[in-house]
Image (cartoon, rainbow, N blue to C red; front, side, top):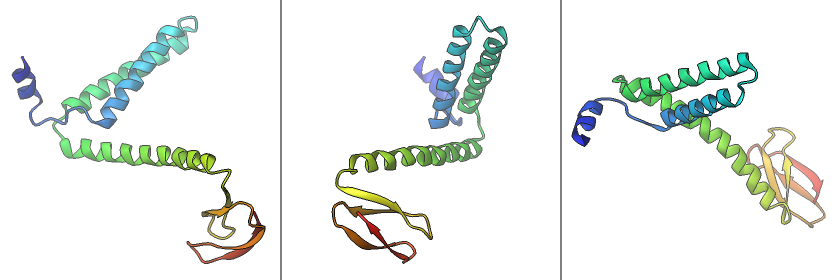
Length: 136
């Protein structure tokens, strides 16, 4: 049985990160359709979206156009890195809030970190070289 599945999937894309995401999103949509049975229109909308995502996930897994599926997966991973990176930076800033103050550069809007309790200091942006004074 295992060999049959391996032969079937030979030359196909298989399950990548984006296909996994669409499968999970489909399951969430189908669950929401079951939970929102009282509102028929909403339930039907979730049901249709869930089935469409599920079919798309299977289409991606069994697709032989590997180049196109890899490009889609790369775009998804790039977007995912942006989102998770944004929250990782915010988490790090929260953890370091007692030791450092964070400022935005007035000219380039880069985030700058300076130690707390140093009084009024001159901060120089490493990105653009702009200097400004601020109180820490």
